Length: 83
Image 1: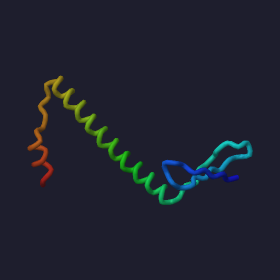
Image 2: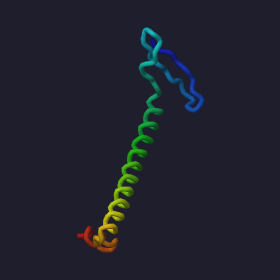
Image 3: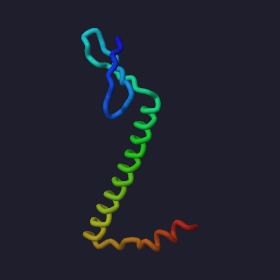
Image 4: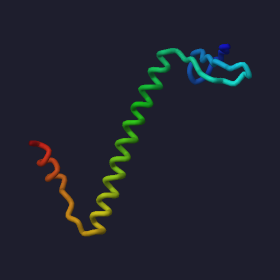
């Protein structure tokens, strides 16, 4: 069975599929809304990966300083990756 409801934040009808007991089991939204949600999700996943990478780099720098390990400079890194 499918029931519909108008959501205020998305001026489109969102439909719910429910089971025999009335429990919502899935949602149907307009494809355009799905694309927006999917694009936002992809953007946020990329942002999380970037922030995780920065966090790992900060940990690596702290560990290297703690152990007295010499770190590569930004200029060395850039020159190394130009070739």
